[in-house]
Each structure stands twice: as C-alpha cells, then as structure tokens.
Length: 296
Image 1 (cartoon, helix red, strand yellow):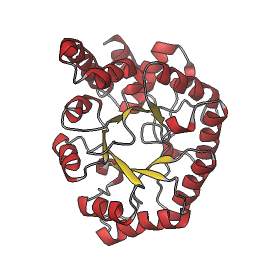
Image 2: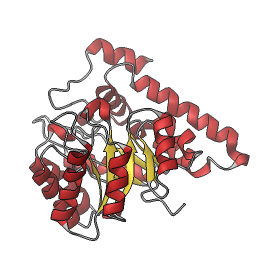
Image 3: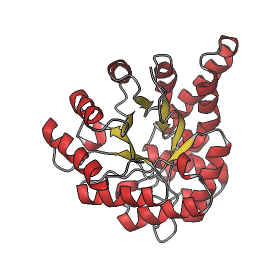
C-alpha cells in the first residue's frame, strides 16, 4: 500500500462563539495551539463539530485567515469547504488554496437528496475542473446521518481514476467499522479516517490512516498516544488504558447533545466562557443537563 495522506489524529475542532454569536478568533487560535501541543497532527476546522453550516462564507474565510495569520502551519489545517452550491464550494476551496492550505474536507452537495451516482460524480468533478490547481487535495466527507447523501464506492473509484492524486482520503463518520474496513480494502492508498473516536484503534489495526473526531477536543493526548503506539506490543496495556479513557469520554459527551456537551466540558476545563455558546439553531445544555454532565 502506498503512503497515506493525510495520516494521524486530526481534531474536528469546536468553534468558540462570542456574545454577538460570531466565531471567536482569538479563543479558537488558542484552542488550535493547545490541540497541537497535546499531540494532534492537525486541525480539521469548520466541520460538523465546528458548526460550519451555521456560518456564512465570509465568516468561514475570516476564521481560516485568522488561524493562518496566527502562525499555525497551513499544512496542518483541513478546513471544511463543501456546501450545497458547487460555485460556493469552489470559492471556499480557492480561498483555502490562496492561504497555502492545500487539503480540504469536502461534503457532497447535500440539499437535494438521493442524487444519482453520475450527479454526485459531476458535482465533485466540477469543483476540481473549475479550480484546476495541481496542489488541491480533497478528503471526502461521508456522514449520511447528517447530510443524507452517502458517498458510494463507485463514485469514489471514478473520482480517483479521473483525478489521480486529488482525492487522497475520506472521513467516514457513519459509525460503521465494517464500512471503513471495506474502504481500506477497496482503495489502497486512500487515507480512511475514522469519524468516531472509539473506532480509530480497530481501524488502525486494519490499515486505516487515523481519525478526524469530535472528542479529540478533550482527549487529544490519549488519541495521539493510541495512534503512535497501537502496534507496539510492549505498550499494549497503555494503549488499552488510553482507549478506555477515549471511549469513556465519548460516552460521557454523547449522553446529551454532543456539541453542547463537548463545549460544556471544555468550558469546565478551561474556564473560558466562549465555549458555553452555540449558534442557533443549536443551543447550550439546560442547567439540569449541564449539572448532570459536569458532575458525572
């Protein structure tokens, strides 16, 4: 199998929100630095966990610019650029490339449900053709429980054949390990990244490339340890202990609404009020939920 790219632990970073319900650039940059210091290989910003689809294109561009301007290496950033309109996806992706951010995570167009395979291929192909930049690398984003538009194997195969070297990975957030393992088997060289924290370890053992996950906002140290030592028989007990902590935190954060729970836990850890807020329609936990979560 050829070298996989991207490979490692990438945090699906939460986005802190100001009192005016805008992305808090300074707090987000500090969070990115903390995640990298804790062992993340990169930051997958502006994804589902980051509330990206609640932000305008201007807000998304501004946040990415702030991160790059703060000195975080563009090679360590995987911004989400896939939206419902192909032209807007092109614009967001071109903007990332203008900042030397060359790898993006791209949802399929998700408003119209049950597109044909030809239509889905055409949408991605149109993006690549319009951008026409040899630096571009795309991580497909398979999250059918949110997008309602799965990315079928034949579409992946067609895209990789038509645009060699462009479609380098897939974030699989469907939560089905067998589906991820089938991707590894079907597409040698494709970086298959788990979208659920507990599934990274079994996926790594089958040839997966790592993860892009939400609970990494809280357990980056443990995920990084598992990624780096999963094949070391001498550290198997430590890997299993780290995995147990990962699973426990994932379960804790999933007791109530996940993004609100992650933000409440991060606020508890950091004391920073910007983690309390979400942009509507998402809302913080109720007082009773937050008390139950933080006391658990």
